[in-house]
Image (cartoon, rainbow, N blue to C red; front, side, top):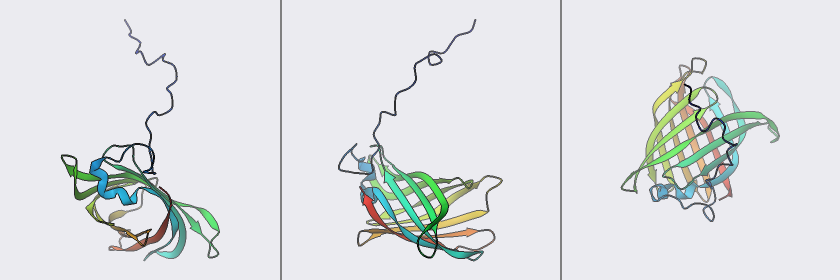
Length: 192
């Protein structure tokens, strides 16, 4: 006797019914546990530069989105594209998505933060760190790579909001190199 699950012949599902927002003036309320991350919620866009001991320096543009759906974490998405010296786009570059999970006790933020990031290059990173006002400092707790991914062993990230702009610096230890500067950028708020 075979039993047909009820979902097998069900009609198509409707659109995702829960709102996600990068604008705190509309949408769901920010979860109290994510209160320390409130200044980061929004869409940020700007330019930066990259370097590493094994590559030539390069310029890029980037858009970062921090959004939420009312639960105790922020969704994070970053996409970048390489630029010529005159500022014209060359091609898509690095992309990553993940979640910024503020630690909390009874719904109250502790200032500690877990950040999970995944990239199409086959690398997943778990960062731990602290939120201190408009500054976030993160260090890797674990790095997981697919068999085809480049060797990345650890990283440190520093984010800060300075004069209304989101600045960040990223250092990594990879491909036999010690922890070295890799990326930095200044992003301006364009929404949220």
